[in-house]
Length: 337
Image (cartoon, rainbow, N blue to C red; front, side, top):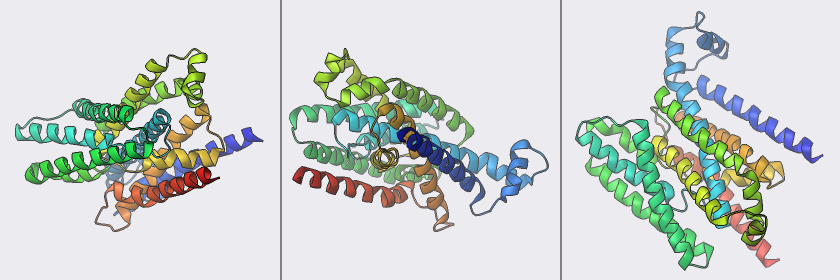
């Protein structure tokens, strides 16, 4: 019975992913007819305007939203595992904001010196910022016993980093860096095929690494003592969790800026759908769920008030924040019982 539920859940997630991709390709300021899509990809007599819109703008953007959304959901899942806290995530712990700050500094410095940044430089800069904030949060976790206070500390780190980033963006406002403002608020716009290739490699390798850690994650969730008795080197395992979650969060921030609530909300929604917390099932399901969540939110961000485009974080917050509130209320009820 459970196997049927798991199979049905993955079919649902896979189906929603395909539908979301198609909708993102077809819907926009210029609607592309569904019947023209096969011709566009097969290059057989499709309208040139439609082909240019789909292949150079919408399709790379949709793939980026799917890849980065999946990576962000996995990053949130790893952080929740690491801290044993259901509302831990790259955004709430300030990791995304730290990555954003360093990337903004590098972007402004490069633009001021007329240098062109590669995607790899952006990821390295974001990873450096993410690791600095992650290190600070881990140090705080050794001092603060209450997890609620740790989350508050992470939020404060995020606010400080965001304030400094906004200051940099404001005074670096120039015709050459119009996209910097959109990026600092969170956006999947302007994605190129080079960006998609780099993020696919980085996120793909990290996601495979996370999936290979399914058994250790399962043991760690049972408690550190149990994990040690099962032969797990907890210290090395925790380092790997930190590195993988930071790489995934950094990759998202480097290309799309800060994207809120995906890392918190998606793992919980997927757990509800699967009815299990087994990592070997939850990890791929989280990736699929994050992809669907970001694709739907990006579609709404583009089309809801067209031609004005909302930041992706605005839309993800609308859907993600209620999930976080539900988690907090549910935990409070469980403690009361």
